[in-house]
Amino acid sequence: MIYLDTSVAVSLLVPEPRTADVKTWFAGLNEIPVSGDWLLTEFDSAVSIKVRAGELAETDAKAVRKEFEKLTMNGLRIVPVSRAAFRDAADLAKQHAHRLRAGDALHLAVAREVGAKSVATLDGVMSANAERMKMSLEAI
Image (cartoon, rainbow, N blue to C red; front, side, top):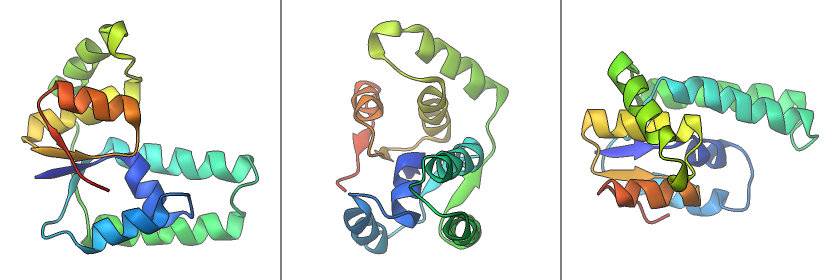
């Protein structure tokens, strides 16, 4: 099972330096990746940040959000975030030496809870922590 991080979902739907790589990787998948409910909030936040920064026009943001909705209906399985995952994420975030932000800790906790064997992320800190937690990284 592949767990999809927000950084990959954003790059899949919003033009970024790694978009071509992400689209190629995604098109070649043999399974539907999974992500937690947190992705819904974090994705919209990332799009809003891009609009506020002037990197994305409001009309483009609206189109991106429609594409994201299609993705979550057909190309991505969204799982609920349990209370146990929130507790696990808090424990991960307490380990300050690992530099995990709250959202990344929550993604990793959900990935661990659902038994994901690999993580798809473009985030270096999250990558290092996924490997530390014995999850492999998707080659994007």
